[in-house]
Each structure stands twice: as structure tokens, then as C-alpha cells.
Length: 404
Image (tube, rainbow, N blue to C red):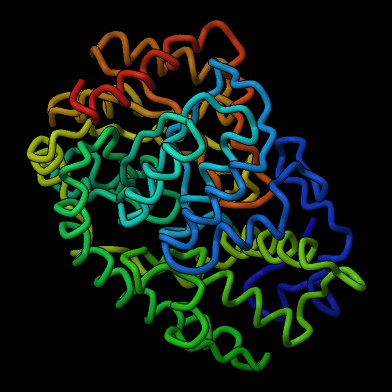
């Protein structure tokens, strides 16, 4: 594990050591976590959308996929249209390679990868569902001064627009274009703060040169805080402030970079983060827009964190102390669904959440985000009978967006 802070004095003496290659993310996966072949991953990530889909067609023809496990669904997969090691084509292939029955894309502030994801599902033979994750201002609610599910900002919550009808993709992408533009203006200011913090170490990041090329911004993707941290991680490594494994392979290098991103996001973002203000829709605005496009808007439950499965969240209090009040607020606003990640909460948290969903008639949706190559697409908890309702809920999303 790393002891990487945000200044030279916070780093391990002599630089952050990435050489052990373990990178335990808390879910039992280490440097030898199963992942699709790196050469194949590169072919599915590179080139245009058409070229990636052509590569996927060739890969699928050669593949020997495992049997589908009907319990395995994941409706919360990020791609490189926000931040992920996977393009939409690669994400769908990886999901099928792990035996998933269905898979769903929900990038941050962008649905630019949705059509590729849908077509990839057809090629591989796996049903898909599409959506978008965004941050929503709670400034107009009684929770305006409380932290709900956003580690970085009080009065601001993550929500997911699930099961978007396919004829509304371009409308939704256009709606979030100003959000992405304003977010990038904020990103540029955060890069300035990072450079100030690291000036004595020689860090000199340029947003256009070092950050944008790491994203799909040129094709309608978003740029997130993790992109800033990846650019920083690479420059720290280049400057000798963080060490790669000796004679590191390309795969080991990728794992090490993503591990450092997780550490930097947890330790550094609080020191450089600039709150999002006018870029985020209000709760009433997003509820109204979700109704217009016919998707299913869901609050994304996080719950108090004691240890982070993804390795990029510190122990922190979130919405549990006032969860009853939160449900009353979102119910009054017109939200009819809640999405949650079963393996990242305690049984007590899950039981309380599910009881509140039943009380308010909220649809329950599941999915666990993929931000690192170490993470599995499998949600192990879905093997438990108590979560069988989430399987049918997933199929209802697919039917909804396809007008069935």
C-alpha cells in the first residue's frame, strides 16, 4: 500500500513506493486480479468507435466465454467516457468474460459512450442498459448544509438517470454539455492549485497537454478529478517522486498508476477541490428533466464509510444519521428509485435502506462502479437470495428503456 500525500513532505521519504505490486483494494483483489488480456484491452480501447467495435467483433469470434450466471448483473459501469480503464466496447467484453447476464453504463456527466455500449452488447450477446450519473445541488432542500453521498461537497448529491430510452441519448448528451464545459473550467483552476502545491517538486501540469488526452472529452466524454490525479501520478513517477516496480511490465505499470490515482484522490483532492456551484442542476431541475426524457432517476446511496473497497475513500460519515429525512426529501421531490452497492455496505445498513425503499415504494437498483483494472465486474453479494429482487429490477430497466 502507499503512503502518498499531497506535498513532498507528505510523500514517503524518498518517494512513494509502488513496487510491491499488491495494491489491495479491500475486496481481496491484488496485482494478479483477473482482467482481460492487455493486448486485447488495447485493441478494444484504441481508435474510433467503429474500429473498436470491429475489434470487438473479431475478439468475440475467437472468445470462449464462461457460462452466464443469471444472478450476475451490474448497472453501474463507468467507461473511459468518464474515468475507467475500459472503453464501452472493452467494458462489455470484460463483463461478458466474467459471466455477467447483463451490464449497464453510467458515465459521469456524459452519455457519449452509450451507443457504442449498446452495439457492443449486441455483438457480444449480452443485454445492456444505459444511463448517466451526475451531481445534483440540494441547495433548495432542507439538506442544503449536510453531506449526503458526495465525499467532496456538502449539499451536493450523486444521482443516476437509469434506463434512458435510446431515442433520447442525443438530447441528454446536449443537456449535459454545459455541465462538462463548466466542470472543465473548474478543473483548470484545480490544476493551478495542484501546480502551486507541487511547485517545489517540479510539477508543472498543463490541462490541455497532460489531462485532456487522458479523456474522451473530444468525443463528448467528461473530465473528472481522477483524470487530474492520473496526470499528477504520471508526472510524479516521471519526476522520481513515486517508484514503479523494477523492470515493470506494461500491465504492472498500469496497475501502479491506478493505485496511485486512488491514493491521491483520497489524500489530495480535499486540498485542491473547488466546489461545484452553478454547473450542477438542482434537485427539482433534474427531476423535471428526467421526467421529460422518460428515464428512471435514482438516488445513489453511499452510507457511512468505515473502509473503502475501491481504496479512494477515507473513513467518513455520510447520509446514515439522517437517512429517514433524506428519503422524505427525495420522495417529496418525486424520485422513485434508489441505487446501491451491496458489497460496500454492512448488513445493518442494507436492511435499513431496503426497509425505507419498501416504505416509500422506491425501486431498488444495483451496480458497483469500475474505476480501476483491479476491480471485478462481479457483485459477489448477488449470489445471496436476499438480493434476488435486484435481478428482476435490472430486467425492468432494460424493458423500460426499450419501450417494452
